Length: 249
Ligand SMILES: Nc1ncnc2c1ncn2[C@@H]1O[C@H](COP(=O)(O)OP(=O)(O)OP(=O)(O)O)[C@@H](O)[C@H]1O
Ligand SMILES: [Mg+2]
Image (tube, rainbow, N blue to C red; front, side, top):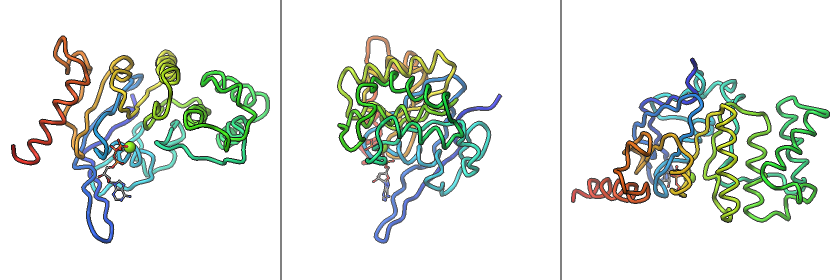
């Protein structure tokens, strides 16, 4: 069996002219087939950096990252993946529907299959009503929805979402939760970062907590979080503990 995501001792140092940021300090994680895994951590913890390594945008300083058993540096590893960036940006002169058609063509889709797929995805993200408007006129939440549809165009086996609920209203968050549940029913693997801990708690099989470039907890919510406590409280305690350790309290 090929493991969708396998990261071992991953370190990323980001060097600028003035400083070196040790963004990831040797993290190891695994996301099994058909799992829904939430990746949580405070701002600057290294979530997007991890996602960027998986997508091949950022090179690891040391350690390894594999998708379905393939090193992430081989582009073939990314064919089976759908990705929603933290801040989706795209061609503003296209309409939402045109964007999905363009994205589908990148995966060799065409004709009626592509047309139907685009229509199906527009329905899924509740964007049919605005499908033929230019993306330039979309609100932030609408951008997020069309970005999510784009991430799913190739019917990926693994979906990597960097803050899919960012900028969404409560109905949008509910939609994302339902979409993730649908993906799970269809046997997909989902790895997503989020600050919406109540959403994470509801939808995930596992959570991974990252603080200051280190994993401080991972596992099923029911095993990590003591009975009667919320994931949010557990998260806050984990972050504080780590911060106190860093300042030597
Ligand atoms: N291009 C860059 N140059 C310098 N430092 C960077 C760069 N990209 C990321 N970093 C630093 O790496 C660390 C991790 O950032 P990252 O974006 O991965 O965090 P994050 O967990 O995604 O945070 P957020 O919740 O705010 O999205 C931060 O300290 C950030 O300042
Ligand atoms: Mg981020």
